[in-house]
Length: 74
Image (tube, rainbow, N blue to C red; front, top):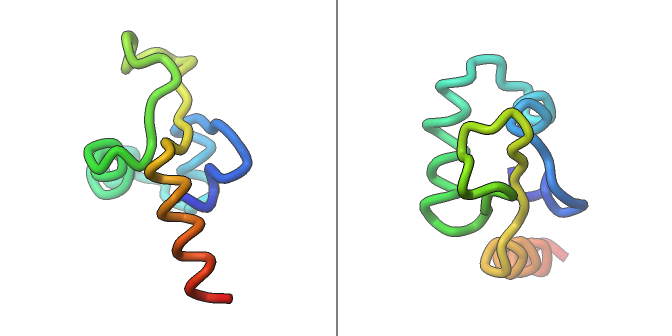
């Protein structure tokens, strides 16, 4: 999921499409909330978590982890 956010903000639906996950609760419980809790991603509209315009982006911590993982595989 982090790789899909490296080029910018994406909605929950876009992330599910990229990851090929159809079941919204599975995506939310297994991917979205753990990444939010770990502070690897953040909401673009944190004051309105259920907004239809909500998108997600990498945090500095998420970018650092992504850079570290990519470096390991080079």
